Length: 125
Image (cartoon, rainbow, N blue to C red; front, side, top):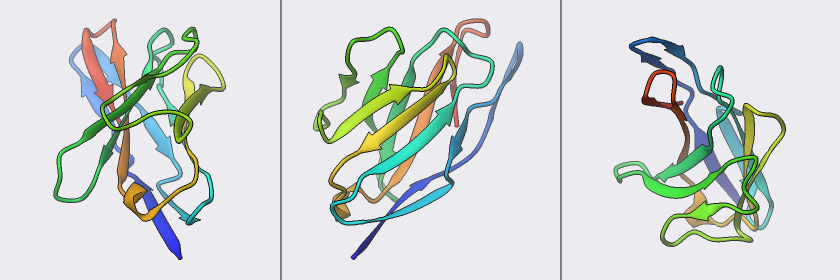
């Protein structure tokens, strides 16, 4: 059985400039029990964490986790924990959400967000 995990690509324009947070792939389909990975690029923001949210269509976004490259571990929202949900980084701007042992309940839209201190605003994909 296929479980679909979706990511929506958008951009947020900030008052003092443009911060573009991007995600890939736009749509990810994996089989039950497999591992899903989603990438987030924070654009020009280099010294901030990546925050991940899960939203089931018709529902409100749920905070999954936040991760910074200098953290020894992720900080989790209620109902989310390791080892099922983890995050890694590939560079100062590239972060990855990893969902292990995917099940039907994981099917949702996943959003990436960061804090842009230069604009004093959050930037979301």
